[in-house]
Amino acid sequence: MSDPRFFELARMPLNQRAVRIAEIFNSGAAEDDDAPSRAKRRALRAEALKESPSAFFARRIRELRHWGSPRRVGETTRIVARMIRDWAANGAFPSPGNHTPGSSGFCGRAASLAPDYLAEAYSRGLAPRNFLGVATLWSPATRAVLRPWDFPRGLTHAHTEACSISLDESFDDVLRASAGQDPDHRRDPWIDLALADLFDAGFAHSLEVRDIDGALIAGLIGVAIGGVFTIERLYARDQEALTRGVNSLAFQLQRWNFALIDMPATSELARSLRCANISRSAYGAELAGNGCGGRHGHWRISMDFRQPARSSDSFLPQKVPANQQMGHVRDAV
Image (cartoon, rainbow, N blue to C red; front, top):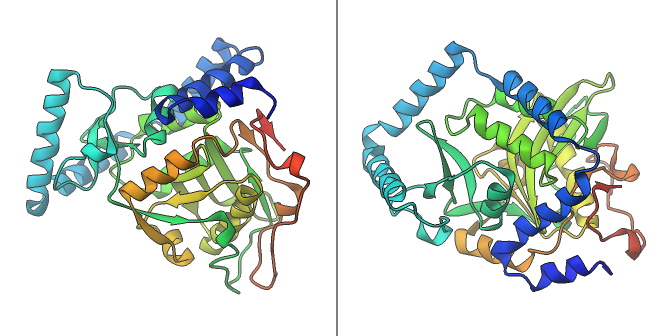
């Protein structure tokens, strides 16, 4: 922690830290990642995430059915009215405390999907969602969360083909796999592409669980801001494999001094892990209290966590020297 930039971060207000972290990271990344290669990679991702016409129209129909249902007409009207006011006033950055009354957490439109803007959004407890073709920011009233030190958790004796765990090795594969499995109308290919941009900037990360042949059987994508890891995308051909993978991830996050894992409250994963629910304000306090923790940059899992956790193990993270526990580096080993 002798780098003066870390002391600078500690003194900065929370809502300025995420952007400054991105600047520090990008200043070191510029030499080995030129603009043409980034543009080419983004174009390839956009093509891979592009929906077929039938998938596009099916998702639009699901959206219209959801937001146009009689019990949601009032909520939809309030959200649309708020968006019109935001466009007319060109308002400031949305705040979770200023969510639209009677909605499920709508806070405002997303002025951008650029990595620095989204890093700032996540640092405030906001996440991008699709609303009738418009990128918007949401903060749910409750969050399903667990502490990394509350593991092992949710492991059973169910058969699984899980053989190995990795981090940040196949981000695009996990993103495509989750898109194919999850028909949620709140997703959109451009929001998935924005998550990929966050990965390039060192904020988003992927967990991959593979079988003995190296095939992807489970995975997730999340965003790390400070010491809080927010899971955004899930893929599970084998639910038990995903649970075991998350246990290994939790042990790694514990080693890196993360404070909280946040996941979709309605997911099978949250139910199997018996997550606790916390309020929007409590989640904001966690973000504020852990703004300078965590680990920025591309991740690698420690050797002793690369095998999936098993229900028969007393599988606990091993102690490591203090000088290996902390740090914000581009490649975390």
